[in-house]
Length: 135
Length: 186
Image (tube, rainbow over all chains, first blue to last red):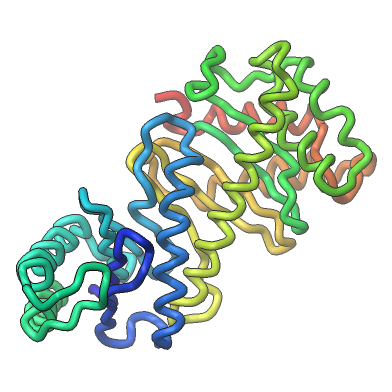
């Protein structure tokens, strides 16, 4: 069960967020911005505290009831999904979302990089994808 | 593979650190910190602010480096602060996004390591770094707390309530416990 999707730009700004259902607490826009900033910062530090050299940043965060998966693309954009603890296939889900991002945000001539994604096709594609994942 | 253990007290200071399979440090593998380790931490019996933290954090690692004790201490203390910062932030994130009260942050992983977290009712935080293939081990950290920490630190009347843990018995039993864990040095 996928509860929320966040897309964080390479500077740590929130460019897209959407929650689905009531699986996570209802957050205000401001709280989502703080969440994105925190994930961005923690992601950088987790790579530094590795006991083994050459670590990536935070990938999967687990709590008693939730999992948060963070996929960083080559261009530094982070796709974060929040799911319930039983969910699997996070990486594949994130890659599908990245596909949507590439198709409907990056290829959209009216989209400004680093700015919030406002594209109907992207929203529609995301809704369809999440429905498929959650069913 | 189990890499490192950090213990933070309720004042957020690192009171204990030890590395088990010293890959990153480049020293010999094995966490058996000889008597030399005491040198780094002995000064810490006077707890107070950053000094105690530095001494406590360094206690576990000081042996491997020989003459470079001071440098290693500082490095480890810095790392302990980063670890605590990460854990603190992630704990906040979890409590913020979770729909139900009292959801606990359990672990996170990156491509090369996994960090396990356990907090006792009294606010003592245990952080264990392992390789990313390890399962979640909340019960292991709980046992380290209940069977080793409580037995040899809490019940020791000679140790100050706060401040770095300089207790050879604790160290020995901790090492024995961790060595028995499945996947200790895979």
